[in-house]
Length: 142
Length: 193
Image (cartoon, rainbow over all chains, first blue to last red; front, side, top):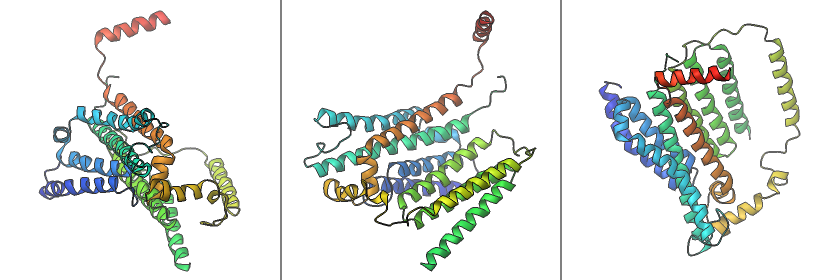
C-alpha cells in the first residue's frame, strides 16, 4: 500500500486502458498476434497493479475472491462446454463446424468462445496466485 | 542480411551478458530482475524469427507476470543466496561438452524458412490452406492453437487451472492445527509406529 499520490492517480488512470488492451488482444487474436493466454495475463496485470498500490484489502473489495475462484473454474467449463456442445450437435469433441450457420462462422464462434475460456482461466489463476502470495502468513508454529 | 546478422549478434551478446551476471549475483532480487530481462531479450529474439505470437507470450508471461509472482514469493526467502561450496569442475565440463554437442548438431539444421525442409512438408501446407479456406482466420497461429490443436489447448488450460488450484490449496491451508487434531495425529502416528 503506497501513499504516494502520483502512483495512486496513475494507477487509477491506467487501470481501464490496461483492461481495454487486454480485451483487444483477446478478441483481436484472430487477426493479429494475441489470444487467450496473453490477454489473460494482461487483464490480470491490471488487477495486480491495483492490489500492489492500494493493498490487498481494497483489491479484494474490487474483485472478491469468491468471484475470482468462480471465474477461474468457469473458464475451463466454457472450454469444455464448447466441446460438449459440438458433440450434442452431432460433431466430434471440439470441432466447431456446426456451431454457426456455415462451417466458417461455426469455426469463428468456436474459436472466440474457446479463447475466451482460456483468457478467463489464465487471468483468474494469476490474480488468485498473486493474492495468495501476498496474503500468505508464514506459519512459524509448524 | 547484414543488418539481421548485427541484430542477432547484439541480442546474443546481451543474452550472454545477462547469463554471466546471473551466475555472479547472489542477491535474490537481482536474480529475479535479470531473469525478467533475459525473457525480454528472448522475446526480441522470437521477433527476429518472425514468431510474433510466441514473442508476445514470452514478453507478457515470462517478463511480466512471472516476475511479479517471483517478487511476491521473494518476500518469504532470505535476502541472499548461500555461497556454493565445492568443486565446480565437473558441472562446468558437462555444460561445455553439452554445448559443444548442440553447436555441432546445429550445423545439420535446415536453413530457417526453407520450404523444402521436413517441417514445412508434413501438415503445415494443409494448415495454411485450411486456415484461409475452412476457418477463414488470417492468423494461422490462432487457428492452429484453437481449432486444429484444440485438444492440446484444452489440456493446457486444465494444467493452468490445476496448478493454480494446487498452489492455492498449499498457500491457504496454513492455519495452526487445533489441539484436538494435533493429539489425534499423535495418537495415529503412535499406533502406526
